[in-house]
Length: 166
Image (cartoon, rainbow, N blue to C red; front, side):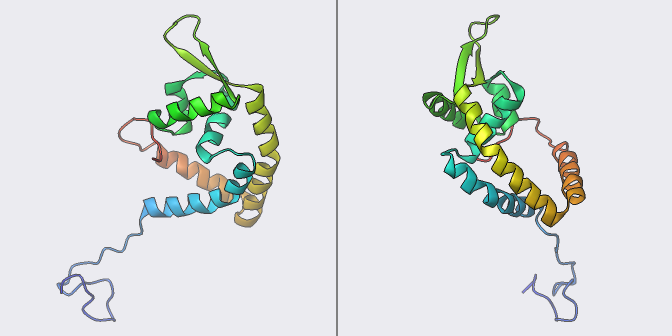
């Protein structure tokens, strides 16, 4: 029965005397924290008929201006196949615009449409209130420190490929 504690007085050792692995899962901890944060935003986004992934696309385009699909996928952390389907939907809804690149006719550039900017403008006041609440409950300095640590952790990425959550 290896792996079971030999007695309750030493929970750090197994029956064979080897140390018990007690490290918490970083990945699960990050997912739990993401879920806790996003639980505040999902109702706001749902009220505007926008998914989390669509919101990331709209926000990235609002901040960056015009991007091609690969740049957008990387900045919004969405896998290319998912982004392709999503762009079609966002374009049909009039939230984004597609343009041919003047310098490279094969390249398509994406831009936030006025209706997409309107969604951003409608969601942002509620979004700011959620962030203010998180700052008040968790502490502005702790949020800033956490964001700094997460940036450092993200810099450790080994494969250099754009990520996604699918």
